[in-house]
Image 1: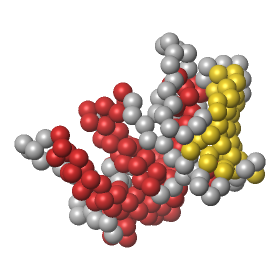
Image 2: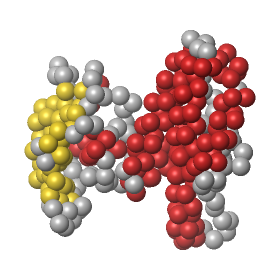
Image 3: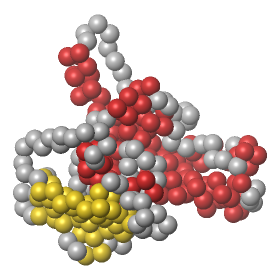
Length: 260
């Protein structure tokens, strides 16, 4: 995959930018605040549909404008794809593939694939567990874009369930969302464990080149006992916990059980 052209409109510091790119190494040189990181961030946004520097869309949109646009021509050995993304503040983002509107921005997942290193990566080691989960989920999404849909569906189900818990909703109202949280949560645990199982041999091999004194391990610690790569079994365990923790969750207005 090669990005041959990157075009930005009203993205952060850029009113307009049209950048042609070739194969090989590209280096951006400039003073602080001139927009070098903004260029890299725009490519990452097309990859993950979020920013590694901002929690929402507002900082990405140039002040005084309503939307930002990222367009990229992506060259594969057998074809070239034009991917376009409109980033909005108050409404859903909109995407196009080869000028054809998509039903959801999720449909552009996997077209642009990028790996990045930044100072924020230190949070993977020294930050809280949510940073490590985010890192694993991004890795899984790069390998298989369908994982993004599982993550999105799980987060949506948790958000809706939390809203109901805050109103102390009845068990009958909560049950459909219990099932969705359990189903998508069980799938996510399974995907994470499978991904780490494939990553571990590579991790061990590379770590040996750094140090032979003490081996390093990748361990997935969960609040659930006995989790496995079997999504159905994981979902059953989540459902059991959701049922047993019902009174505590209603008291706190928060889902306490899941893939964390």
